Image (cartoon, rainbow, N blue to C red; front, top):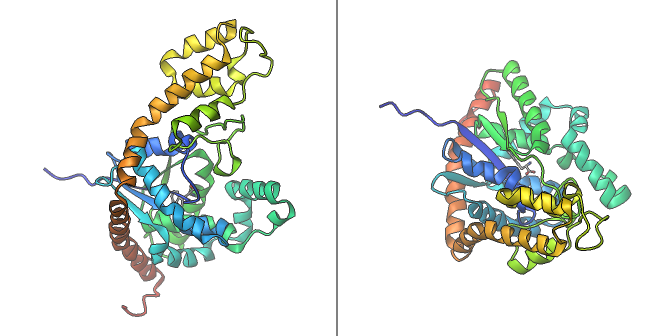
Length: 340
Ligand code: TRP
């Protein structure tokens, strides 16, 4: 029987902190599903993290391990997928250099993801946010290098990443029409849950926003966080009717307590459900949900040598592919002056 070649996917995370349930529902869960169907590469995008954290490389370095653990904990199987450390693959930097000549500065400034992130920086740091570096502005080019270097056909990401995939497609088309059809145009694969709201009701759960439930949070932390979640402020007494649609506890019940959702919502609306017990029920469910994830995390935490090996072997395997892509790119541009 002829073996059908699996399509390849590449996706990744910036190693800047532990991953939270927003990451889980927004992308990790989707990756776990896809790993059976696709040849999967997971990039630990430390170069991209550095565009935002250049004065703090230790933070990025430490989180390479944490991010890998979170992915393994979520259920990505190292037998099925390949983990790659971005900065250990120099071809990615090489391609970034070439592609940077295919993208205008104004196009980068108009990229909606970049625009939002610059806006957030301004909010956080005031006028300092104005000092956007060349490296930061250019990270969509580096992401295009990642995707094309691996010849990825599909890129599973959250919705906020769509403009980056669009930018990659533009680069691919430009390169291919200018030189030769060597680069593969990728498609984004968006997961079912788009964006998960924060405990404070913010539209986005974010590492830097302090409103997250981490995959590795222990029982006590989860209970404490849920206790502090924003609820319907009109509800004062235990038996006041309330609107679960404007309550973060109600919102997370949708994710973690699907089977009992109707009861939760109708009891809340009728004033038959106190917030204390409602929060307890939610926390119990979250703890239960995260249990297998945390057990897998523990397994790998106890085996740091294994995690290291997964990264080293994966990166080695990756370079066989990325070197070949650079070779093709140089040939297409006729700048393959001599073999190394
Ligand atoms: N931009 C992604 C994030 O912020 C990380 C990333 C880097 C990535 N390179 C990638 C995602 C390539 C998909 C494909 O999480």
